[in-house]
Length: 248
Image (cartoon, rainbow, N blue to C red):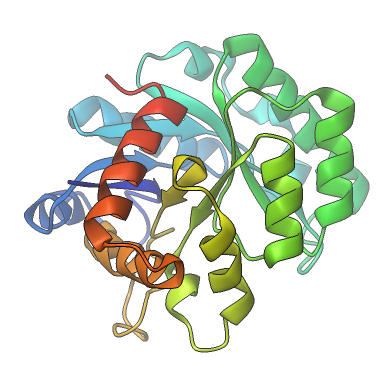
């Protein structure tokens, strides 16, 4: 059994049908991730309607200008909500001013502490500030660097502070040698796999919308990078997803 630790269901062009398709492919647990108020509410709705789906509530750095108070505080106490995020810093696009991103990230770290929830981090071209804010605010006990895009140096920094790394379809890309190096050094008990669907479709399905059913392709690529049987990655990431997100 596989778990998709990070997907966006529903999303534009992606409906509930992908859940049944995922189950048919052996992907039987999904974490549907919020990026703003609308997507967080949708994630909660889908989680309430499906026993094998859980939700997160968060404000993506692209949407940090909306303010963390745009998220309903009641959502963080919903039993189907298992994490805060995705949140963090994105200095590649800078859709929100950097000071606004940093403030929203710090506020969401505080929410993870307050509600004893996991923290799901999005970071792009902002490693130093990401680690600095985590140090200042205190890393939540269960912290995930989602869609890990760094290399061995960034992986070691994240692992050294006790975080977990989640690998997406990027690990299958021809030009992602450093990501595969990061996967190779990541201990199996600190490892997750995800699709980030409908984005980042893995090889050999590039050019199509991504779907949680493709998690086994990500897992196989991670297994290849680590030189381990696919079944070992499947079992480890299933267990790690359950532990990180407190799934019953």
